[in-house]
Image 1 (cartoon, rainbow, N blue to C red):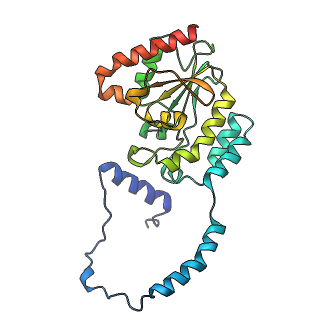
Image 2: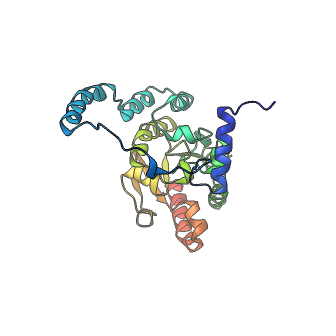
Image 3: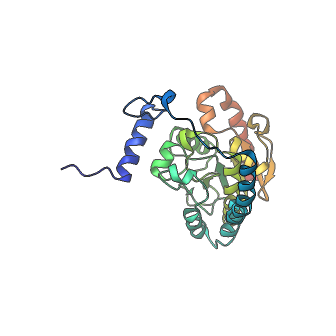
Length: 263
């Protein structure tokens, strides 16, 4: 006898349908919404206002400032493992509910260069490491062109990679400002713990979090300061895959990074 549909199986079936392109949920039988009874005895304006006045103090008492919670738990982390554990236990970002994996970091934490990307994609969510899909493979080739490698043991040749968002947004959408604000204390603490010489802000979301600005095509190539460190905005490798002609500017940015490290 076939067992009942449990939560994990139902979730897997739903994800499979989403991957196939399903965008709407429908019932087995049509619903005649014209036959639905009209709502009776709706409270008047005065009654609704009175109820709102009673509910408002309760809502304010129960409200949690997710950014303050993030700031407190991130600040208490003594090392990277503690920060990763704090992220895993953080329950106020709804992206966590739809993601398969917490994507924390990759590379050598002793590296001089720290790359901060935007958010995990499907491959990253599945594997649990940042920049492992097509964009990540291009990033590895870009770094190799100036003698850097995420697998290198020597700090001079190594890179350390993370993202602003540790969980994949649904359908790879851009993270919302509130979601970025919740994750910002974790990114700030991450930078403080790794203490790199320079930071690469890879893409618009990374620039929004680190610089408070968007417009990567104008920001790229111009050194700035983010998280108290010299920071170089660069176009995301995913953009370079869509716009190969932009690789010329990306190469110029890589040479700028190499010169900065050499200095």
